[in-house]
Picture 1 (cartoon, rainbow, N blue to C red):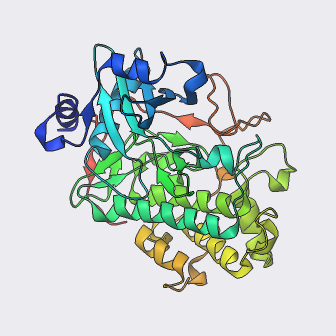
Picture 2: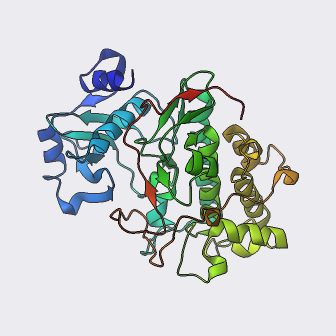
Length: 369
């Protein structure tokens, strides 16, 4: 089913009429020959270019590596996951190209790049993230994840929620992007066993260690991201003093000391609501609990963010932290958001990849969480 549906989409199946099939020549012209001047992003599976279609529409053109088997599989995964779903906080897939060896996805263009490059990036950004903007971003991402987890059928586990996969439009509305590692969760299944894929620092412990991916894996990643949004800091920065290098570890220490406000981003501005910011960080800690059962659903996360649901602080215990992975070495050279490295290095944001979507080792399992 997985590959068949993607193939139908590429061939213009009537049931997936919302996805347009472009020729390679159309996209080559739209991006001026995939020129470096139009390159707006690069990752392990390929590059993203800014393009202009014949009708003047601005688009983001994601070109997957023609030589990478993983790239082809990511293409099929991404097509299947989002070809026919729409939500205000998800990127919109406009079309694709599967001409010859080319595998290309075309999305709506988002003016303000990713959270990793604007809020957390080391380069100067002219965007000012005041408190209301951060609330809008945090709630929007939560709503998008709640939609994937609970409103569509089959449910979708994203598997790679992180700052570089949150894009921002001109109004700073967040859009969850990059569904190349996504998994469909079959009815009555609570988890899928799979090869580990994602980014160290955002990986839930049960997933990183046992390869069991659930909705709660995404919720853990969201918790880390929420702390990044409030603090304005990357989850890992080995240039800082040892006690400050890992954001989740530092947040927990300050929570125990009753000083959560000390880690709030000092650049937020005059509209900062300290009580609300501290509440958001408590929600981040809840989402990153070691025991999956203690992590709230994304629907409840949305309700807690809005103040509709009370936070049970008795459920906040020590979260699972990056330093618990004793066998994973962190280098002293910080990786910039969006930067990729060869497998021989050990960057601060270490990525894992998978090559077999829904292979024989990925069996949907029914069990209690």
